Image (cartoon, rainbow, N blue to C red; front, side):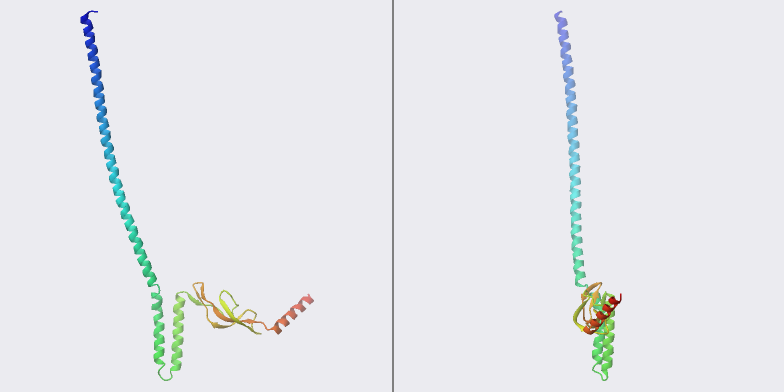
Length: 211
């Protein structure tokens, strides 16, 4: 191989190597640009997420403030309701007070006994009617069987006219409020006399003997 030919081949190899180097440089440059692009895109995404997070935090704080204000408002309304819970009842009782005052005014006049009695009866009737509207009912007592859930027996009396355990007298009315006992009726309860019990026992014994 002549020197001239060998020099030519070396030149071609050098040119080929240079071409490869240039291509590698171009590839690396492109890759670097792509990396820069990806970094820029990631930064934009992070900024967008930060903005979204900030907006979500603001919304959350606003909601918390709204809930707190709602709680305070409900507490104020609840307290107001408790403070004035009896307002309607008091309004309903005012006419009864008016009637009592009128009855007392007329009691200073002559022949006022009957008018005072009528006034008190009217007031009591009106008062009981008002209380009934809100759920207050008197406990059934006299003539009813004794019920320890509604009656309080102060004593027992012998009675030939009533069966055992029947309420024969009411000393003080009891009251129920919407199915809840708020005061039992004070009562006297009947019991059979000893003589009548003996007669009943004797009759019962005779009937058993016959059978």
